[in-house]
Image 1 (cartoon, rainbow, N blue to C red):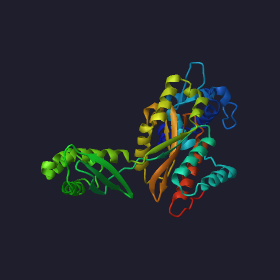
Image 2 (cartoon, helix red, strand yellow):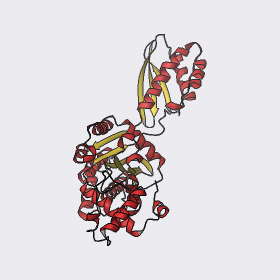
Image 3 (tube, rainbow, N blue to C red):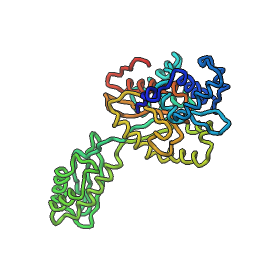
Image 4 (tube, rainbow, N blue to C red):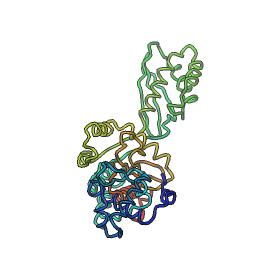
Amino acid sequence: MDHGGFIEQYGLSERKKQILKAIIEAHIEFGEPVGSKYLSSVDVISCSPATIRNEMAELEEMGYLEQPHTSSGRVPSELGYRLYVDSLVERYRLTEAEISELKRTLRGKQNELDSILDTAVKLASKFTRYTALTAKPRQRRITVSKFEILPIDGNTMVLVMIIGRIVKTKYIRSDFPVSAEVSSRLAGILNKCIAGFTAGEITVPIVMEMERAMGEYDYIVAPVVKSVCELISSFDGGELKFDGINKLLQYPDYYDTDRLRDMLDLFEKKDDLLQALSDDAYAGQNEDRVKIYIGRENLVKIMDNSTLIFKTVKRDGVPVGAIGLIGPTRMNYGRAIALIDNISDSVSGLIGSGNSEKEDK
C-alpha cells in the first residue's frame, strides 16, 4: 500500500514530521505514551513545550496520534505508523559483522531450500526480538498430467496419477467387478476429461459427462474422481514455520490473555495465515520489495494489534517462499525491514539458477 501522499494531502510541516517521528521512535523504544516534556529535550525539535503540545494536538486531530488517557502523552495510531514506514523511517544498514554472519550461516546449507529457510527463520528471530516465520506458498495450479489404472483383482485397481515429476497412487475398491478393459476405458476418459484440471475445475457437469461415457460402468466414476480431487487438494506444497513465538510475551501488547490465546491459535492452526501469504506472494509476483501490514491492515483479522513484515523468496522469478517477522505495532521498523530485505535476497541468490547474490542492501 502506498500512503506516501498523506504528507502532501494533510500538509504536514517539517516540524510536525519531526515531532511525529520522534514520538514514534520514543514509543518504539520505551513502550510508553510520549509527552511534550520529553520531546522538548530532543535535539532535533527546537521549539517550546507549548508549541509542541499544539502540534501534537493537531497531529491527533489528523489521525496520526492517539491519547490513551486524558492526562497522558500520545502514542502513534496505525495511520501514524503507516506514514512513518512509508515516508519517515531512516534506512537502517546492517553491520558488516551481521551481514557476514547471515551469509556464512545461510551458505552452510548449500542449495537445499528447506534447510535454507529453516536456518533463515532462526536467524531472523535471533537478530530481532520478534517472532520470525518462513512460508512456502501453496501452489496455484495443482493438476494431474496423466492417469493410468492398473487392475489388481476383480474389485480392486490402482489409480496412478502423475503430478509434475511426482507419481502418486491410490487404491480404489469397487463393490462390483471391474475388468481390465473397463479400467483401460476409465483411464482414457480421465485423461480426456480432467487431465490438466485443478480440483476446482472438475465440475458436476464434467463428472456427469464422464459417467455417460462409461455407460453401464458409471458407478466407478464418482469414487475415482473423489480420490483425484482429494489428492489434488492436499498436494499443494504449502508450509509455514515459526521461530521465537515466546518472544511475544516480552511485549505488553500481548499481556491480554484472550488476545494472546488467539495469536497462539493462529500459530498452531496456520491455515489462515498460510493462505493469506500464498495469495499475497502470487498477487505481487512481479514485485521485489518488503511488504508491511500494520494493525488492521493485516492479512488475518486476529493480528489487528500486530505488524507483519515479510518479503517473498523467488527462484528464477517464481515465488517459492517468504521470510518475515511478527511483532507489536511499535516495532523497530528500520532494523526489521533491513534484516528481512537482506535475508530474503540472500536466500533468493543462493537458490537461483546462477547462485549469484544481489548486491547488499
